[in-house]
Structures are given as structure tokens and as C-alpha cells.
Image (cartoon, rainbow, N blue to C red; front, top):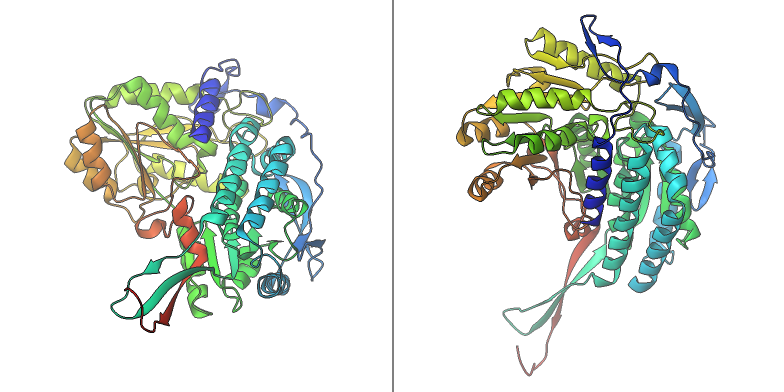
Length: 534
């Protein structure tokens, strides 16, 4: 709850900022708006952090890639190079997996008492908290998200997650089972072994915590591949785990590309479990590689096209604010973004006008600047993809209320964009845009909106805005998604499980449920001779 409250306070502060909106730009060559043009005229703020770690982390040491190759990680504010990072490939994955296997089979980590593992995780969390500002600066520099979001929300959430899983370390236990005969039966919950983990670029450190936390608490060892767009913060955090006393080989970090390092990890015969967060299409490839190799179990957290349903009894002003947050948070680069805004016909016109006004007030600019709500998109590929979706919306007949083009003339900034009169068959209503594009659809009654909301290959999350508890209960049970937020959105407490239905993934992350991903259950049956009782 503390993390969700921090998000709310941060967003509330951002809503009140109205000083960053000089006039004078055009979009699609036809209209004028009020977004700030500061990004086009001001020099980017220099981050107050040095890039210290660009090598691979294998067996407790920072090392170059076996090939000697590096790749560039760039600043999305400018497209300029931040650093050259070691480019891991299959040979490096082999080295990392060998180190993790040795650490699991012969090292101290799985043989430690759970209390000792807990203490190391708690020390790691303390070190991350101590270095909050440096880690947040790296995250914003490499990713483009607002520094206030990184420093005040995401790094504290990272710390909370590691402490949460540290608390679980000495509470993992099996059961005693009653049998129909003279046998003593018990179950053991054992660590699964070497876990391969592939994290995305939109929330690098939070996804790091979602995967590393439960795997380590259960006594596993890890080979983690970072997204090639955002390799820096995970290397820094992993270093702090080693400073906290994590033995060599327990947590290995390989930076590199999906078709090389990612594919090698997914198909490796000595990896016992795989966890992946990313697009649905890539998730299919990962699942196939895992199946074709050693049939390793796979946890997948994939894409979404989440409905945000505004009912007829809604307070429109509050609904507009929450729907705005549900879509535009993190530049719209959120798998569970409320990217299909369904609004009841009785309040539709009022909602559209106020949603447009709210988008026009959104502060866009250098994410290191105070009060900025929206930074740049992650890279040129994502930038161009979003603009293609916007063009398709216009071509398919949706009404472009505001936005629709790049913001400024440098970096990967996109104007907050709102479409009305969107139809279900349009690409902007069916496909995951992963950007600051709000699509507003009209509905008549609950039966209709349930059918339309569920008519998608995705099932990650949904939002419902209503004052009627019966309406809320009806929608909660009818929507085929892994999470339903009622009169809130993006509440990510450490204890709340997260995952999707249908093609949004399989398995759950966070909370007690995530521990099952990293444990195996063994039944032990012992014959009893002349037992006093059964």
C-alpha cells in the first residue's frame, strides 16, 4: 500500500504543475496546441551519476564479452550514446550458466540456512536504498522515465520487494500428509536450480526485483539477461547484492540481444526454469525454445490491451484523471496500461472534452526536470511504431482530439494523444501501441461492454470506475483478466500477485504465488512399523 500511495502522491503533485506550457506548435500540419517546446530549445540536464559498470557480471566478477564486442546504449532524450556495453552471446551465456550451476550444486547459497539468505537480501535492500539517487539517475538516463518517478516510486518499490522476499526466505516449508495406510508422508519444497530470467526495458529494476527476489529467497541461482535498451541499472543493483554478501555465481547478469543471448538462455539445456517479461510474440518464441530444449517450465508476463471502464454513475472529473494516469503513466509504455477507455454513452461527450483538456495540460520534457510527467519513448523503433499507429487511427476514421505527432525536434518525445469515436475493429483499439495514445470508445450497457472488453487475445488487467458496488462486483467476475482495479489503477503492492489470462502470459509474479515458480515439490513416503496411531 505504501508504494501505491507514493505513486498517488507523485501523480497528484504532477497534476498541479501548470507552469511548463508555452504555446506554439502544430501537429499533422493542421492545428495548434499548448505543449511546452522546451525540449526543442533547452540543453538536456546532465545526470549526476557516472556509468561505472558496462561489463558482464559472471561468477561475481565484471568481465568483457568473450567476443570482445560491445553495443551502444543511448539517451532517449537525444539519441546520443551513454556508454558502450559488453555484448554477450551464447558463449557468455554458457559461462554464466556454468557459474550458476556450480554455485547451486557446490556453493554455499542453497545450503545456507534460510535466515542467512534472508540477512543477505536485507543487506542488499539497505544498500539499494542508500544508493537510491544514483540508481534512479541511471534508470532515467537509460530509459527516459521521469526522475521523480524513478527516485520517489520505483527504487523504493524495488527496496520494498527485496525486503518482502527476504521475509519469505525462512517461511517456505512443506506439509505432512495423511495417507490411507501405515506411512509417514511429507512434502519438501526444494529450490528448482538455475533460473534463467529475461527482463524488459520499460521497468528494468522493478522487473529485476519481481524475478530475482523470489528466486533468491527460494535458494536458486540466476542468469539474468537485461534488455539491450536498458542494461545499466541492473548491473549496478547486482553489484550491490554482491557487496551485501551474495556468493559468486549466484546472480549473473548478461547484457545482449534477444536473438543471441536471449535465445541461448531460453534454449540452454542446463537452465532449470525460465521467466520472461516482454511482448506476446517474443513470449511465443521463448516458450518454443524452452520446450524444444529440456522442457524447462516457463513463467510469461506478456502484452495487454486493458479496458478501463467508466460507468454512467461515475464522477467524470475523477474518472478522467484516473483514466489519464492509467494510459499515460510511464509514457504509455506499460503492459497493463488502460489502453481501451470504454465510457458510457451518457457521459461520453463530457468525458472526451475533459480527457482532451487533461492531455493538453500534460507536461512533456526532459525527465530530469522537476514537475515533468512524460519523458521520451525508449528508442527510435518504438517512437516510429507509435507514430504509425497514430496515422492508422486517423486513416481509419477515428477523431484525433489532440496530439498526434512528435514533441520538439530532438529525442523520442511524442505528444500526448487522444482519439475519440474509436471502433473495436481499428488497429489502435486491438493492438498494443505501448505509447501515449488514449483511445476512447462508447458503450450502452454492462452486457455490451463486458463482451467487447473480453473480445481480445489479451487478458492482463482491467480498470472499473463506478460508485455502485453491485456493478463493480458484476464486472470483477465477468472480465477475463488477471487483475481488476476498482476505482484505482496500477496499484502494485509487493504482496499482490500479477499475471494474465489468455495470451497475456502464464503464471503469477509478486506475492506468495510467485514462490511457486521457483520451487519443486517432492513427496517423501516412509513405511511405519507398528505405528501407535495413523
